[in-house]
Amino acid sequence: MSTNQLERHETLLVKNGLKKTGARLRVLDILSASDAASSQPDIEHIVGKEIDRVTLYRILKTFEEKGIIHRIIDNQGTANYAFCHEDCSEHAHHDEHLHFNCSNCQKVYCIEHAHLPQFKLNLPKGFSLQQLSFIATGLCAACSEKQKQS
Amino acid sequence: MSTNQLERHETLLVKNGLKKTGARLRVLDILSASDAASSQPDIEHIVGKEIDRVTLYRILKTFEEKGIIHRIIDNQGTANYAFCHEDCSEHAHHDEHLHFNCSNCQKVYCIEHAHLPQFKLNLPKGFSLQQLSFIATGLCAACSEKQKQS
DNA sequence: TTAAGTGCAAAATCTTTGCAAATGT
DNA sequence: ACATTTGCAAAGATTTTGCACTTAA
Image 1: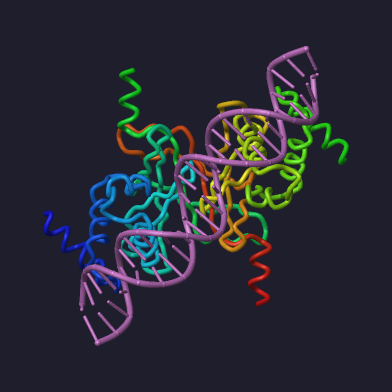
Image 2: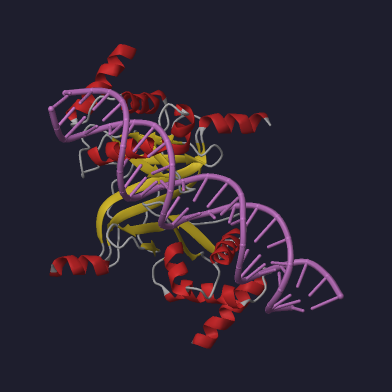
C-alpha cells in the first residue's frame, strides 16, 4: 500500500520530467495523507526544518505548473493545495468541482460528487467564461461535531 | 449627483457609528467610482500618500466588520472590496451573488443579475452549509475586446 | 473635552531572487 | 559529467502592533 503509493508518486514525477528528490516525495506524501487540501502553512509546519521554506515554495509552484496539484485560495487568502484529476495537465487545469472551506478550522475540502447543476450563466455583454468554480462555506463534519458538544 | 453621493456616504458612516473623516470618505468615493470591486493595491495606488497604508488597512477592516463592504479574495489571493447590499450588517454578510474574476486584468466584478440556480448541494455527511459563492473566471468585456484586436 | 481616528516607526510575516553547494540521472 | 534541485542569505513586499498626535462630535 505504502510502497504502492511511493511508486505512484515516483511515476508522477518522472512522467512530468521532474527528478525524484526526497523533498518532492515528502510533499507528495503529505498531500496524499490528507483528506482535505493542504494549506501551505500546514505543509510548512509538518515538514518543519526538513525542507527549506524557499524550496517548498518552488516545489509547490513546479507541481502546480505541471498540473500535478491545483491551488485553492481560501476565504482568508491562504493557499491550499490538492491533487488534480488525471485529466489535468500543464496549462490546462480542469478543476470544476466544489470546494468547501470550513469557517471554523479553515480546511478546504474538494468535494467531487456534489451534483453540481449545469446551467447557462447570464453574464454581461462582452464577458466570456473560462471556468466556473463553487466555494461553499460552512462547518465541516469534525467542526459540526465539536460545536454540538459545547 | 456628486453632492448626493457625499451625503449618502456620510449617512453610511454615521449610521454605522463611525466618524466622518476625510480618509473614510475618500475610500468610499473610490469604491463608488469603480464598476468593479477595487483591489487593495489599486486603492493604495489611487490614494498615494493622501492616506497612510496602515490607516487604509484599518479603514477597510472597519468597513468590512460593519458590513459596509465585503472582501473578495481573487484568484491570486489579492483582497478586493465592494459595497455590500443593503441587507448586509455587522456579522451577517449576505453575499451570494456571482463574482467574476478576469484572468487578464484581474479585476473582480460583482455580477448581480446572473440568474443563479437554486439547488440542493449534496455535501458529505456532517457538513453544513452557511454560504455558497460562485467564482467565474474568464475575460471581462474590456479584455475580450483587446484580445480581438491583437 | 475626550473618545475615535490617523500617521509614523518598527516588528513580524510572507514571498521572491541570486548564487554556491549538493544531488539525481 | 551536467543540468536540476536545494539551502542559505538577503532583498522586497505585505500585514500587524504600539504609541503619540490629531480631529470629529
